Image 1 (cartoon, rainbow, N blue to C red):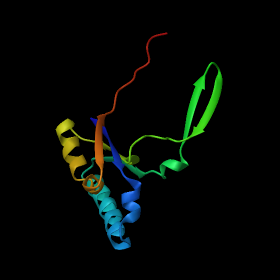
Image 2: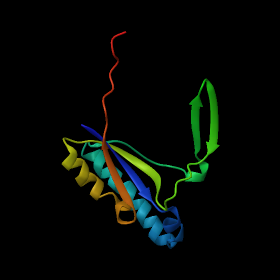
Image 3: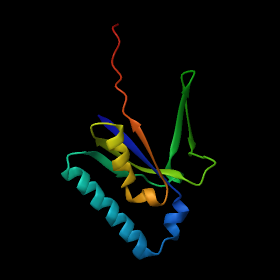
Image 4: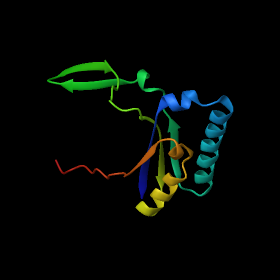
Length: 120
């Protein structure tokens, strides 16, 4: 079953890290991705650009609007994701617990939903 591990952390915390510590964290993260790939559990892992690069898109009443964002009242922001294919939720939680950024933020684990077409 596929699970999405959403990686949340405070960007200010990472920005304040000494360069060697930040490099170590980045390398540890990439090493962990390679470990998951070698086990056949990794579907994809990606880091995200900072929140200030995001746009929020709404379509209402046939119109489109976009705003800068997201503007969320929290220090932790979504910074990346890892999509894994593991047997069950417990296995996904174990994967999430070893994500290096879990030491600095939070990892939200969500099962992927199957959405199927309904008959016309």
